[in-house]
Image (cartoon, rainbow, N blue to C red; front, side, top):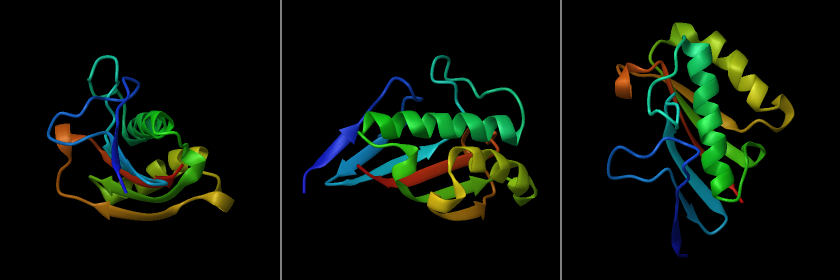
Length: 127
């Protein structure tokens, strides 16, 4: 299968040797999104709730550029700076993913994330 690079100006541009997403056949592998405003490349103001919302908006934009959507996500991995933020992140996450059709998910506390943000989310979706 041929690999297709996915790019959109509606999500933050990559800051290293990676792409926003790569599609291969009917699968889309979206790189981890952090809470950057795509227009300014600045971290959004606020705490983990505001950051989670921006991350999911960025992820939505990348998936749509690949011909998919949040409702076609089959797996996410959530990276949290502090597991004490889980409930707040989860509340926002639930607004983007309906419980009945929500993807599989892993949530991991990490020592540090790029730009010292509170949350990063990556996803695998279908077209």
